[in-house]
Length: 503
Image (cartoon, rainbow, N blue to C red):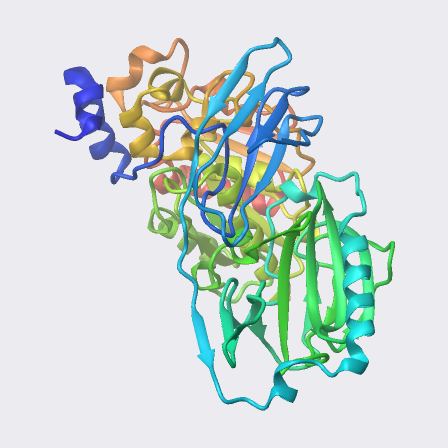
């Protein structure tokens, strides 16, 4: 019998089956006994951990910086694999020990023999230049930048066909070459390259031997993005940029066989895979409709974009374009999932929309709040949240430490507890004009015993409130299908058009 059924017991099994039937869940297995945080424990991956401020973190015998909010960064290089040693000493003196394991990835290796040696090795007269380039790059990576932009949801600096991947390697005439450390994006010369996150430019060189036009952007905590083979540089050392700023243009300078952007990420001297910091391009929504303003829709935990289709149709009938973004709600953490929203929002900006609104259901509203910690909506767009667990859900309080619940709901659900230390309760107030609609009729009566006051079956009315919200409405609807309620759909359109609930 699988361990999940053993640990859940009879009552747990009943709750598990209820969750499957009502939340629309499918089984998603996640590791237990891992440190708090998120990332990819694989070769070339990373982990952003969270602990109490003023804790001491030691990873494989090396002390790791912890910022004032308790976050720290662990990078995993290409050859990292197997069990690791992580210890966290809290301010109280208590020590936590973890032994997480890094999964090894297989990388493509290509052997080419019989090449002219002059095409394999650089000529002797450029060796000094190559060494000087490497020293400048190393010094740029070592610069300290006081910023939390490294925790920001990243966007693709360029969207295009991926022509090269991290970790691939060539063996030329029997001699192993350096692995490829970036993700290559094939685009025509002159295509704008934009900052994937906020930061400070620490390197801007128009003509390095291997990489040609090169920019390095430091995001804080030793994390930096590097952009190679640029045809144009639009920034200089010391320039502060924000996500989406144009910093240069795609080219084919340096040792390049065609126009493309080579985007690399370093954490200190560790070279890690940039592709892990952004969602797949083919999973980002495309706008529908002819409206001049567009609405980005984010569904809830355990649901899909189809749950927002009726609402999206009403919005298009009201004159808005829509972009209905799917995301793997039970497979990744809340900060990682917010990357889908960030990249969808960026795509709508690049498509020419001057004003972008957000409409969310349940946990989708928390993704929106996380995103809005770092950037505003274009054109002073508005946010409407349906049944958001703004202060957590009692359901997570009751079942969040149960393994069967973690397996069913995935890592993001753990951020939705009502405890003040939960991520949802550590988000700063947002400045976006916001309307909230929540229900007072339970869609899940088997959970009613968990609530003291009014609720919609999964979120209490009190939890849905935000002090900074500009409008709040109660409706006779349950949590699961509130987005399909006709009154709710009309209220959403009203707030987007008027900035208030008129009726």
